[in-house]
Image 1 (cartoon, rainbow, N blue to C red):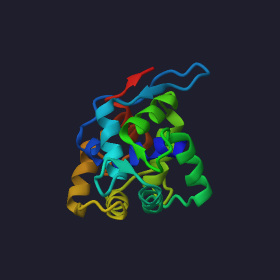
Image 2: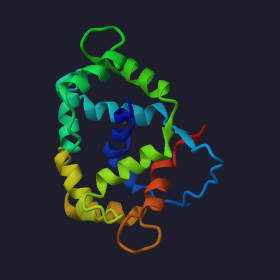
Image 3: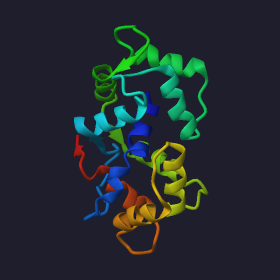
Length: 180
């Protein structure tokens, strides 16, 4: 089920357009902070999965997103996800079911955001460049120019070094979430 959480961050390029105002620096006393997404954000993620806009996610649509994110998954793994998420057993995940799965997960943990960061950071250098954003969005079928991606990175780049580091990414991704 954690793969649903991973996608939330990878799919919402709208978050790139918000300028961060603080760095993520919450003290952690043994327990990792947990954030809860709002329903609007979850709906935007759901809509990315639902490529044919019929109000439900098929196994094929789910698999396409996995491939675009270069997360290889066997049909057995996809079947397991649908076994948990497809509550009415119709072979699809509708928004209500998607929402239930999100809420069951207990929120988004710091390690989920770190995993999403690694998805964007394709060269593994600990920074996300405009080129990396452009490539991932292209694979997801987004129509976005490299110039647009540079603007997105610039909007998040609090220290002005031209790339997004983990702290900037964490701030951007958790900005509109409430701490549980």
